[in-house]
Amino acid sequence: MIDSQAVRAYLLDLQDRITDAVAAIDGQPFATDAWEKPPTERLRGSGRTRILEGGAVMERAGVGFSHVRGDALPPSASANRPELAGRGFEAMGVSLVFHPRNPYVPTVHMNVRCFLAVKEGAEPVWWFGGGMDLTPYYGNADDCRHFHTTCKRALDPFGAELYPRFKRWCDEYFFLKHRGEARGVGGVFFDDFSALGFDDSFAMMRAVGDGFLDAYLPILQARKDTPYGPRERDFQAYRRGRYVEFNLVFDRGTLFGLQSGGRTESILMSMPPQAAWRYDWQPEPGSAEAALYTDFLPARDWV
Image 1: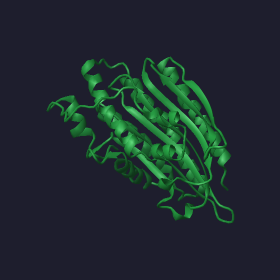
Image 2: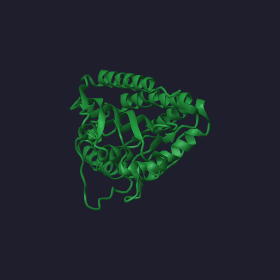
Image 3: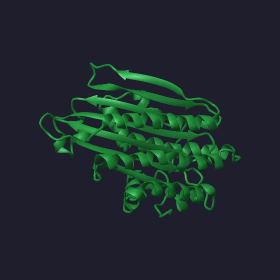
Image 4: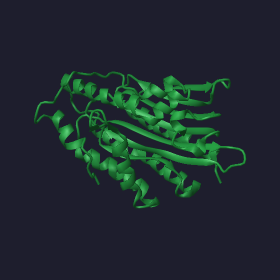
């Protein structure tokens, strides 16, 4: 049985748990922006954006919940799914991006979501999607192993094949084709997932969402007080530029939200507060900055 209200309740609770935990570390609470789309627009629904800016630990951290409905999907979402034509849809999820102040703490992204498309006289089409990925500026092998091991541990009860499959999917998805490089060190990513039936697919999505704090908080706690200076901040801003490029050019969630008439402020809360671009810049050979490109960004098995 498809229980969209159970999914909604879980997502709201997940948002609460994550923001409470991060606010306790930062010492500053998240501001809450509850919003509602007017029903006269092509996309209707509501959401709750939580944002922390200018914190002691988080330069910008956003955790958004949204639950929206529409009468027809945008062309980008239905082009390769003819069974979705003429269907109304319902989409809900929690999405977060944390941009820490300290360059030795990685940026992190996590998303869990549910999609449902309905049409009178036809079986509903539904799926779950989500994942999490880590984007360091100064790579640390222990952090990468911990993050990936936690992802694997969350997925293993649902099938030993899922972590390798979703890890490879993440490596392929979070790749800047025009740069020929990965955005970070990956994690797991899945979409259009319904293979286990609704109840077990929902349980798998919950395992990923519930695993986020275990995957990220130990890294945050271990690195947040590492000394740094202008050089590290400059490199952080330069690499954040890659984050902006990916989100605006390739990210499916960003494109779907903007093309379907979603709430722009909430969609673009993933952007870093500061970013920089330099013409044809190359890191100094043998430097810690160069090691990011040679030792961490190329896809590898971290578990």
